[in-house]
Structures are given as structure tokens and as C-alpha cells.
Image 1 (cartoon, rainbow, N blue to C red):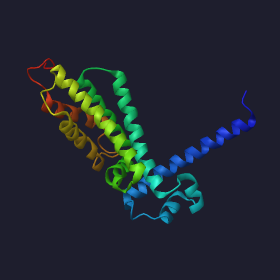
Image 2: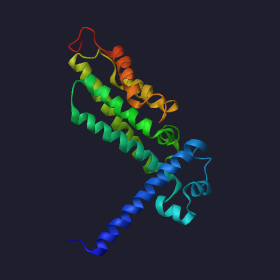
Image 3: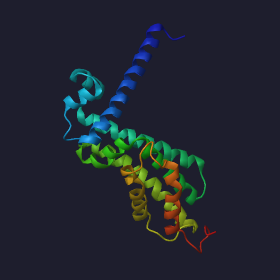
Image 4: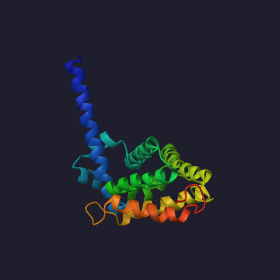
Length: 210
């Protein structure tokens, strides 16, 4: 049986992490509204109702906070990609599910995605390199599905890298108009997007043709 001290320590760590995540979410909204460079520590303190010392206790630095926002997006996106890989299915099914998962993240985290897409040049050194590696890992997931579709004859002979960039551009910028509580949900958008894109890359005479 764990000791009272160990239990108390676990509870404190959980509380600290929960507060840190709340700071990340609140700060993402501030950065999305004002921009990373235009936002000062005092504004972040006010938004999070913390003094400077307490804020730094949770985030370390302003750039570390920016990196944490990027990690939040990439964590969610990669979890979704893992679910798709585990589900299996044809390349068309996989691409459709990837779009569904990505749009769900964008719909749930619009401010984080704004920061992710606009403020990544502010990351430096190891943080920038880590971001590039994680982003490239996700792009590779999309490319792999496209390559599988070409190899199976389900997709025509598209160039996977270029096609993946087109697919990502189509989905990523829905953050500009796909809002939580709006007329359309992520699922409402995902299926039509899949149909539009699939019509463009489907091989009408291949094995995947209906």
C-alpha cells in the first residue's frame, strides 16, 4: 500500500500538471489573439491570474510555453494517426480517417492550431528541431497512405509528397472558419473533404475503382 507521503506527492504532481495544462490552453488563446511576439509576460500573468514567479514555475520561459502549445497539437494529431493505423482498412479508408482525426483536433483546439501554424518560426535550437521532426513524422504518415494507394492501384500515380502537402493544406486552414459551436462540426466537414479529395486522386481503372 502506498504511503501517505507518496499519495500526497502524486496528488501534488497531478494538480501541478493540471494547472500547467490550463496555463497552456489560456496562453494559446492570448497568443492567437495578439500574436506571440506582441504578447508580454505581464499579459500572460494577467490572463492566467498568476504572478511572474508562479507563471515561470509552471512554464519555465515564454518560448517553453510556445513549445508546449505546439506539443499539445502534435500530441493530439499523432494519437489520432495511431488510432487510424490500428484501425487498418484500405488506403481510401485510412486517408478518410486521418482527415476525420485531424479536423477533430482543429475543431477542438482552434487557438492552439493558429499558434502552431503561424508562430513556429519563433521556436529556436532544439525546440525548433524537435518540432520539425514531429511535423515531418506526421507528414510521412500521410505520404505512406498515399504510396500504399498508388501501389495497390487504388490511387492514380500521384506524387506522394506533393499530394500530402495539398491534403494538409486543405485540412489545416479550416481553423479559419471551423469553430466549436458553429453550424458545422468536424465530422460534417470531414466526409465531404474526403469525397472531394478522393475524386481527385482515385484511379478510375485501378483495383480500387468501384
